[in-house]
Structure formats: C-alpha cells, structure tokens
Length: 84
Image (cartoon, rainbow, N blue to C red; front, top):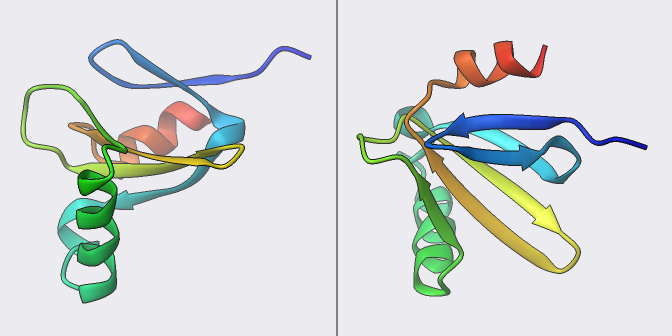
C-alpha cells in the first residue's frame, strides 16, 4: 500500500499515517502544557524546523516509539487543504 505524503515546507514530506495533530502555533502556545510539551521536545532534540521563516504551525508526528515535532511556516488551513 502506497502511503500519502504531506509537504509541510522546505522540501519536508511527512507520511500522513504518522501525523497525530496539526496545531496553530499562535493559538496553542498560550497554554502552559503546550509550552512545556514543546520545550521538552526541543530539549530532547525532537523538533525539526521545516523552513527558515517564522513558523505558523506545528505538527506532532509519531512513528513507533518516537515523537517528532515539525515546525512549519505554512498555516494550518494550508496544510489542511493539502491533505484534501
């Protein structure tokens, strides 16, 4: 079975089967739990920046036991459109 890929910017393609959630960076980082989650992911080396511009969204992806956070310069609405 061929997996579908989502382009999140700067040449990064994510297998949609691994996406746990797509979040708006401005709207979700007000909460302390989200900030703690992102800080821990950064500290553990599990954050990947998909672009050089200011990120607008982040994706939480899970592949087996590994969780990776991707920062994307694309808006959530753009990523949702790309998902179809």
